[in-house]
Length: 240
Picture 1 (cartoon, helix red, strand yellow):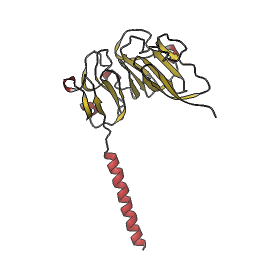
Picture 2 (cartoon, helix red, strand yellow):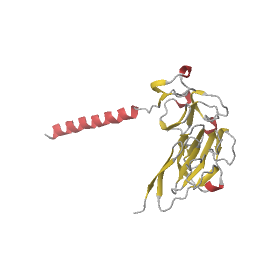
Picture 3 (spheres, helix red, strand yellow):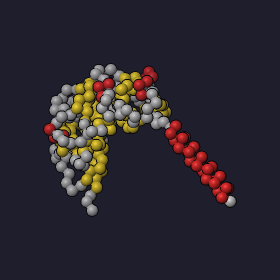
Picture 4 (cartoon, helix red, strand yellow):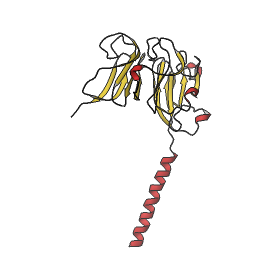
């Protein structure tokens, strides 16, 4: 009886090991569909999901995060190296590789190699990335101050934000609207900047901002933020 039980336990262990090995073989895949004019053959819509081709430098790596911006632009982060890959429309420099050319296939943003990235967000014409250590990098179009650099000029290479309002702040969540941006910091504070025609910055007026500005929210712990085209949402916890 004991021998039979031991055999059953061995078979169960084998089954568990097989499941673990099968899981280890799984690889994350980024799929794209719809209209990505910088990527789609003949600039035609992709009517069904198609796997994104990885660059050779990222072959075999897993994906950590993805974001699809406006006008056929998208980006992803490699889970292994923390490198960010961009592809698609690049008219405003939103691919971050120093030019306004389209990227027909995913390409590592070379100036961010060596910076371990935690999250990415793509707006209509601009891009934000946050690093593991809480830094915020911005590039692309900047017509409404959506990069947060204090200027209105576009950036074709990632620029680390050094606004006084973010001094000693570590970003943990990032989101981009069409032309505005938002982050949540480690201590649950929310900062918004960019286009504000419809009050989407939450600052009590409709004036654009070109530097990160703190949204006055009291007695709530902000857990997440998400920017729409003309509005912004935040997920918060109230004190017990």
